[in-house]
Image (cartoon, rainbow, N blue to C red; front, top):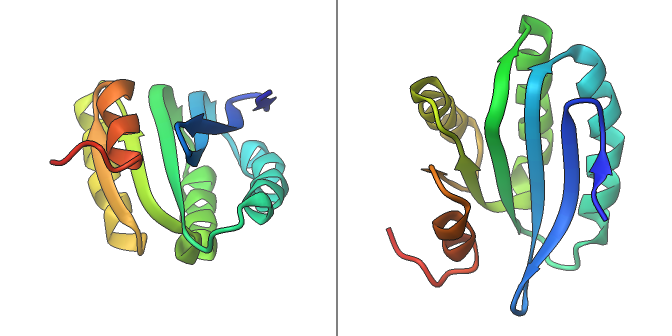
Length: 130
């Protein structure tokens, strides 16, 4: 069952024997969203037995964010960077593709952009090659 925040939902998904963290982000992100998601994300990450986890981030519904959440998101990623092995970002806008490329500079894991959940999930579970 996903945990739903005002603009972010967090869920652990399973595909075969593989588990991954799933985030769906929509609307306009605010500093309050960061304050809500940080402790929840920490709690979810503590449930994973493996040191590095795979993550699916769906930003197809993301409209915008203010400057504070941009800084907050960078802090969140850098603070958890060692926890992520693969991050599949699903988007549908050019600026979302660019955002994923910028995020790749700051994340120690492998980041790829997709426009569909099926290949993104397959890549996360290692049955899809780029």
